[in-house]
Amino acid sequence: MRLADSDITVEETDQWQKIILPAESNRFLFVFYSVAMLVWMGMLVVVVVGLFRPFVEGRPFYSSLVWRGLMVLWLLVWIYFARRWLWRNWQYYAATREILFVGEEEFIIRRPVSLLGLTDVYDKAHIDRIEMDREGGFLSFAYGSRPVRFARGVDMSAAQRLVSLLNRQHFGEEEDDDVF
Image 1 (cartoon, rainbow, N blue to C red):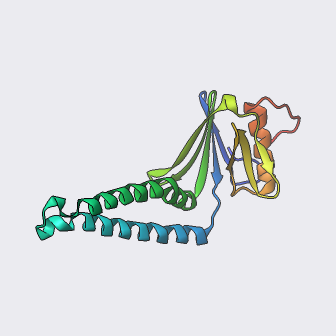
Image 2 (image 1 turned 45 degrees about the horizontal axis):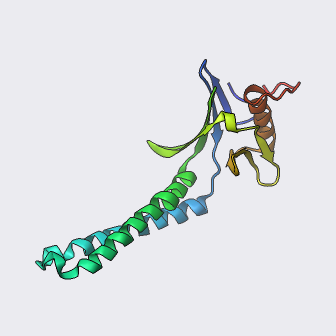
Image 3 (image 1 turned 90 degrees about the vertical axis):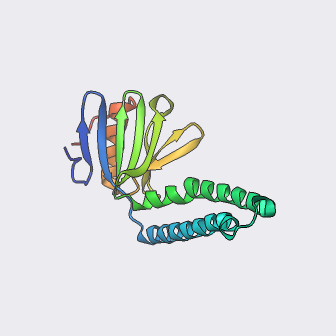
């Protein structure tokens, strides 16, 4: 079923509630991260080729052991950087929708990109309530000491109805108005 006058779809089963939201679209950042991914992959190929080049040229293994050690260290940092920052940001801006799964014990935020995508799982026991940021245009909740933001592609009126729905059904707030 659809949330009144919005692009938000709500499906319910016995175990969870699934809410499909439109994702924030920022083509500039998507292109930026796509180009950065291509540059990263090109540099990865250059380093791997440089790492195995002495073997192809027939030089002994120990001839450039220090250089090869530094290249392996650089390669590990390069892969860590890509996995932690670049790959995650590219997937964030490549996703066209955001899916919330709300169950008895978990609150899951998923941004699917084909078979890939970001999935963040939160323990509902550590979430007080969902709040709406009127200036930033997103929903958020405090998870420990860090804020978790989601639903950036939802308009203000739909976001208010979604906050009301989530807080009433899952976080114990009572409201009189019906969101559907």
